[in-house]
Amino acid sequence: ILFGHVENAPTTAELAALLNTGNIDIHSTVGRRVPRVYIKDGKAVAMQDYLID
Image (tube, rainbow, N blue to C red; front, side):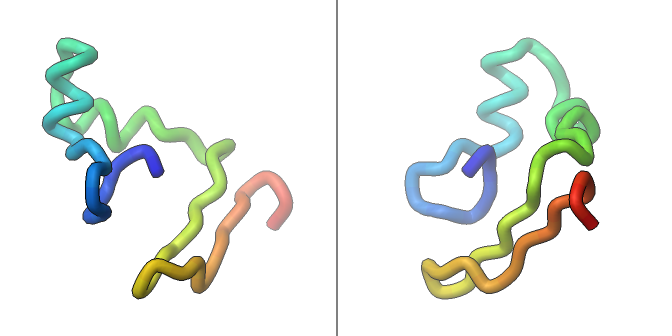
């Protein structure tokens, strides 16, 4: 998990501070090459991979 509402996951503000950048840069630089896995109640419920789909 790169960031999100998960225990011990860094916030985008924390990542931005580490990289000396702004929150929006964290969101906008996660390219379409990175698959998205959507988690609900601790389980993966969906995945989107833009390179395959």
